[in-house]
Structure formats: structure tokens, C-alpha cells
Length: 485
Image: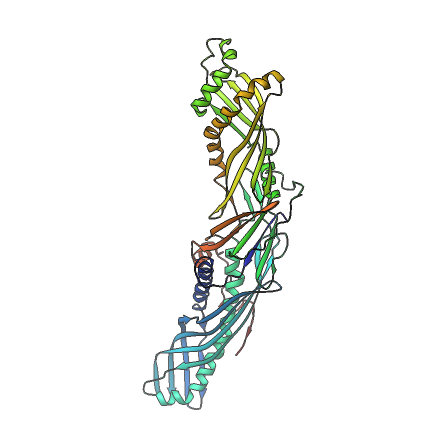
């Protein structure tokens, strides 16, 4: 396992902070569920009893009230949502024929004591993405109330048992197919927005290594979480990192990053030729330009007068992939780079003034913002020497401190501008991390965060839903559940 995360139960807790976020996630999920249940379409109900004929048509759900709900994890890969004592408001058209007398109008009704239990089974699909692989459902309506009126009120009251029983049975039969469609089609549409492969200058493989594991209190997922050079999809860096251990419970989600995650990133960027920085002319900080010209004044003055005032060029290039070390005290990155200083006269070959070796140790502060893992670097240790002569190495000793200061002022801001863009962490569209807390351990770091919806679930699903999605009202839709009459 390269890096992993655990999602704690998204059940609202009392008080501020993470509990409020958990309540918001739960509220958004229930809002989505309400919208889906309101799409229920009940078939027309017809019947005859002696000379009495009735037809109930155009039945629509007008209101849904979810009074009590519970969301929890159940071992063996299921996420359970239990709704109890809910109510549905209905409106339908009634038509009555008794002998030669006809009566028809719209009427309101309510379904009380609605109980729904939904189980979402989660698994890893062939692409390594988390999917809802099965939906179990049980639904029941304990009673229905209808207020009949009009000319034939007594007749309706007499035969209301047949009508109410029929509508209650049909309603029971329609709830679970709608919820099955919501889980297997709509929620999977949302999960399809999770990036499994992310590519820019290099690639990142975020595929799951195995099916999610559900325990009593959390949902554990193990991701590969490895960078790789583009064009080398089968490339793999040997993983000697410590296995992240996730034990905190203050936040809704915890993500563990081992040293391997960062080492694979730097190895991949090194192979891609990205770990280099070239400054020419005005890009070289003025103080650094003056200092370097003073250092190499003897070499410059001996050159042709036509090139003495040429722009200075400074090139830093990593000689080997940097390495990351994570300790409880902080995260450091060790870098060995070559520093080449040249004059770059226009339209003429460059003139090398010096080439030295730089060994540096950078402190790295990791933070989460939205969906991005960002890094801020700070130069801590700095040492330069020449690999050409011991005499030149001795001449460079007085320059250690001023060069380090100028690199901190002129070069580190440029590096941080790149690293602060961050690396995207796989989350569904419309969901971000908030209230991030970063904790360093021996060999890995953990980041705890809460989930925050920046878009409505329905908005994201409508945007990404495929055109050929199966409608839950289609008779061809698979029977997914048990409806308890």
C-alpha cells in the first residue's frame, strides 16, 4: 500500500466543527434521496365492486418528510441508510362510477409510517475505481390516509379499504426500484468523476488496490497512489516505505501518505527533466547578479569586451532524484544539484564561468486546500563545492552564506510558485476537503479533513449522467430489492 485513507461514519455529531460538516454531508445525501423519491410514479389503480367502479390516476408525490434517519457502516462492504417514520404526501385524480352516476376530482392523501432500509455494497471495478456494486432495499408503508368528500363521500368511505390497500401495495412496489436506480446509476455517475489516472507532465495512478473494507466504524480504502513517468506506465519504484497507520477519529476522512508517495513523484519528475531551473538576464535577481559578477570578475575581465556585459545565466539541475524523509519533527527533502554559471551573449556560444555542486536540504510543509495537496519549501542547509578542483572549492567557502541568502530570496519563491499549485487528490466532483489537520509520523504523514459539498449532488449527477441511463420507471429495469407490503 502506497497511501491509504479511511472515511469515518458520516453521522452528525453534536456541537461545532466536524460534527457540523458530517451533518451537512448527511443532509445533502437526504436531500438527494428526497428528490429521487419524489420522482415515484404510481400506476393507475382500477377496481370494481358490484355496481361500484373506481379509477385512481395521475398519482404524484407532492411532499416528503424524513423524520428519523441513520447512516452507518456495516461490516462486509456495506453502507447502510435506515429511514423510519417518514411520510409521503400524495395527490391523485379519483373517478367513481356508481350505476349511472359519475364523480371525479383531485384529492390529497398521505402515506404514514414509511420505513426504508438501503444497503450499498461497495467494490473495486476493473479500472480501480470505487463503485456501488449492489443495492439492497426494504421498504414498507404502515398506513395511508385519504380524506374523501363530495357527493359520494359515504360510498368512498365504504369502499376506501380497497382503494387504500391497493395504493399502499403499489407504493411499496415503487420505492425500491427508484432507490436501486439512484444507487446503481446515479451514485455511480458521481463516483465516475473520481480521477483514477491524473496526467500532466507526469502521471499519477490513484487506482484502488482491492475492494473497500467496511468495519463497524469506518470505510477503509487502499490506493496505489504512485507517480510514474508518462510513457512508462509499467514503471514501478521499489517501495521501502513504512505502512501508514490511521488511528485518529476527530475528522471525517483521514489520508495517509508514506515517503514512497513523494519519492515516486520526485523520481518521475526527475526522469521527465522537470527538476531544473534556468534564470537568464532579468530573471536573475539583481543582488545575485552583482554578487556573481564580483566573484568571477577576474575571469570576466579577461574576456573580449564584446561579451563582458552579456547577460548572466544561472542553471540549477538535479543530478539525481531528491529523497523525502518524514519524521515527527517535520518533513525534509534532500537535493544534490549542479549549478552552472555562464555568460550568454546574444547570437554567440555561452561562456562558462563556473560549474559547482550544491547539496541542499529543504524543509517541506504540507497542506490541503480543496482537493490539492500543496507544499511550501524552505531552504535549511546549503553547501557548495567544486568537482573540478580543491582550490576552487576553497574559494567558494566565503560565498556559502551570501549565496544561501540570495537563493532564499530569489530562487525559492519561484520553486514555491510551482509546488504550491499542488497535486490533485481523488475526490468526486463537487466535494472538497475542509478543516485540514496535518500530522507527521515516522516515515509517513496523515491528513485529517472533513467533507464539504461545493455543488449539489443532483447538479453533479445531472451534468455527468449518461444519455442512455435506465429509467427506474422502465419495466425493463432489474428488480433490485425486497418490497415489504
